[in-house]
Image (cartoon, rainbow, N blue to C red):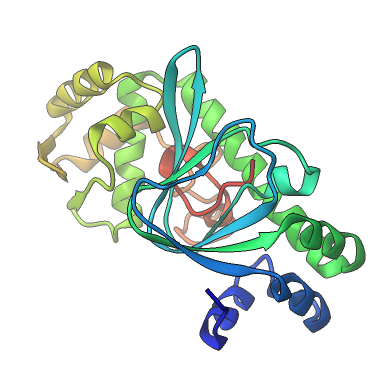
Length: 258
């Protein structure tokens, strides 16, 4: 599918490309193409060579990992998201699988063109470094969250993060089915069910995908959210800032780079 002017404007506005020179942007997009994938389409398999940087413009993509007949969800991406950037820069095999959860439109940029641009355009190279640095910091947040907290505490912080990202309303909607949510939180579905049951004592009411935090002060005391772990708690006390640009896989934020 050829690139339209609207598509180019949308791509140009992404932080990764915003400061690139016109020449660099032209070279990157000259051999790029848009492709429409059906729901359930496999984009990448673990161990595959990575020939393209993927940019999700429409739809939903699930990133997953497997080992010894086990499979887990690593992140769920929504537009506009880049993914597999680290593998492209290193010209390495994919560490994750990628599959569309619904019909999706994806821009594919050739890896060699991207590596060449990173070598020759300092501003684009800095944007790549910032993108990957956000991933690294997000990964540190995830590791701290899973190693330092129990299941109920992880779930409590996840619910607080969803409430913050959905406008702070008392009742909000879980963006994933319970199986996916359990994987994102590093839990089994059974442990997730028990965690939800435990949180009922803290005023958490679940009705299908709708969750109500009836006693927010109580669940916050259990969760003890920290700006050094939780992406919705920047150090300056606001809900907008550099922390919002960091990938936190357990909160299914925008970008994935590995």
